[in-house]
Structure formats: structure tokens, C-alpha cells
Length: 109
Image 1: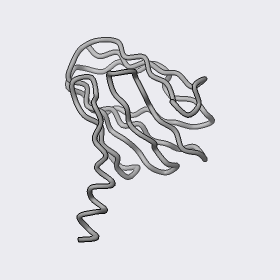
Image 2: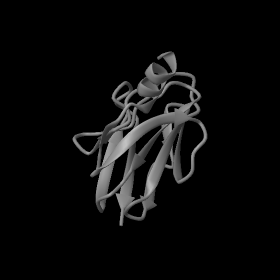
Image 3: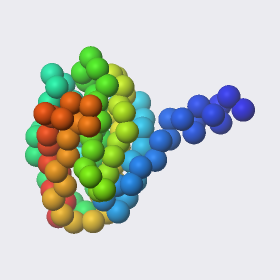
Image 4: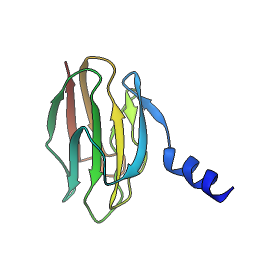
């Protein structure tokens, strides 16, 4: 029962540009956006449609990657990651909903 609850808590789904977001340990394949020093690295990332982008929090505080109604990772604690799969083409500007001065952009082709 505890294992099921833990898996449910770690799964944390969210709407994502026609896809979904999930929380996971720092591991994971796909394109990566690092979060450190209160900034997204790289600030702009271009990926193919269907790509999985991992937002890895290498900072000392919790962050999010939020793009209006397009996707939201939820809170990503230090040392954790969240993945978003982009199923639609377009340009998706995002920000940290905790630290509104943090901005980035995903371009999906």
C-alpha cells in the first residue's frame, strides 16, 4: 500500500502541449533543460514534435516550468526532475511560477 501511494505521489501528471508531464529522479533521457542559479539552461531549446524534455533542478530551491495552459511540471524540488512530452508543434514560452523573473522557451518543430 505504501509503495502504491509513493508511486502515485511521484507520478504527478499535468497537461503538456498535447502531452503529459511526470516527476522523476534526476535521471532520464531526451532533451534537457537544467535549472541552476535561478535560470533555465538553455534559455531556448528547439526539439522535434514528440520529443521528451527533462527539466532538471540543480538549484538549491524548488522551481517549476509553467506555460499557461500548455504545460506545467508542478513543483520540482532540488535534485529532482520533471519530464514533458511535446506532441504538438509550436513555440511554448514558460516561466517559474515561484520565481516569475525566470523565463525560457521551447520551440517544437
